[in-house]
Amino acid sequence: MAQETSEAPIKEQRAKELLESVIDTWSKRPPRDAARIGPFLQAIGEEWAKKPDLRFGQLISNFISAKGDPFNFEEEEFLKQFAEYINAHERSKINYKYKIAKIEN
Image 1 (cartoon, rainbow, N blue to C red):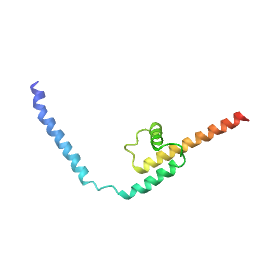
Image 2 (image 1 turned 30 degrees about the vertical axis):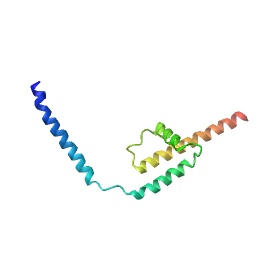
Image 3 (image 1 turned 90 degrees about the horizontal axis):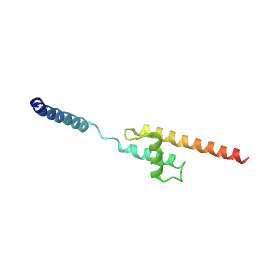
Image 4 (image 1 turned 45 degrees about the horizontal axis):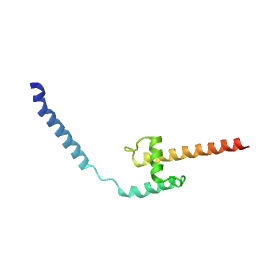
């Protein structure tokens, strides 16, 4: 028990040092370029236009269900994954229409 008590201040000091290191690292990081936002949103809009019947929340929810949480995606990776999702869904819709046409004939 005495050993646990004497280790507590060491653990607290290490946690404090780690937190200060993270804060120092982030404070020295240059800010992200705000000019990237417009082209990113335009690209999202172009993909969304391929599925105009979906509300934005539905579109994003379906995307996350299919591709996983995009929290750590940089914008370029997000757009790549988003386009893959949209295109895969479009292909499945085309296949579905083909199957219906085949059944009807």
